[in-house]
Image 1 (spheres, one colour):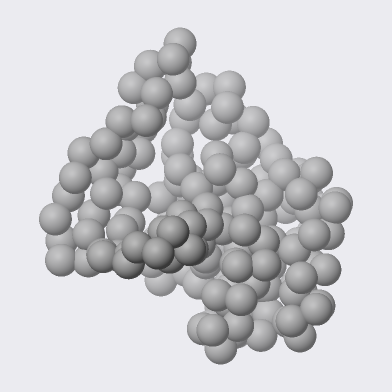
Image 2 (cartoon, one colour):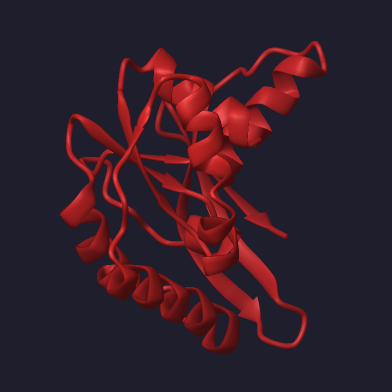
Length: 157
C-alpha cells in the first residue's frame, strides 16, 4: 500500500509529499522511508498540525462527525502543485476533500492496485460522494460512488 502510493506519486511527476495520518503512522516514518528510496522529498507537518489531525481522526471515531473543514484548512497549508498530501488513514478517507487540493488517498491506491493485480481491469474512476454514518452502533457507513461519467451508485459498508 505504502510503496504503491509512492509509485503513484512518482507517476504523476510530483517530487514532494506531506503525510497525514495517525501519530503512529507518522512516527514510524514508513512513508518517508519509501519516499527517500524512490527519490521523493518529504515536507514535514508541524507538531501542532499532526496533533490537530489526530484530534480530527478521533473525533470521527467518537462522534461520526464527517465535517472535514478543519482538515481541509490543514491540507491547504501543505498541498500545492509541487507537494501532494498523502491521506494515510481510513478515517480521513471518509472526509470530503475538494478536488483542487493536491492529495492522494492511500486506500484508493490500494483498491485500484489490488484490482489490477487480480488480473482485472479498473473499469471506471470512482470518487466517494457524501459519506455518512448510518448507525453508530453498527458503524455502518453509507456513501455513493461517482463514476467518471457522473453516475452515482449508493453503497453501504
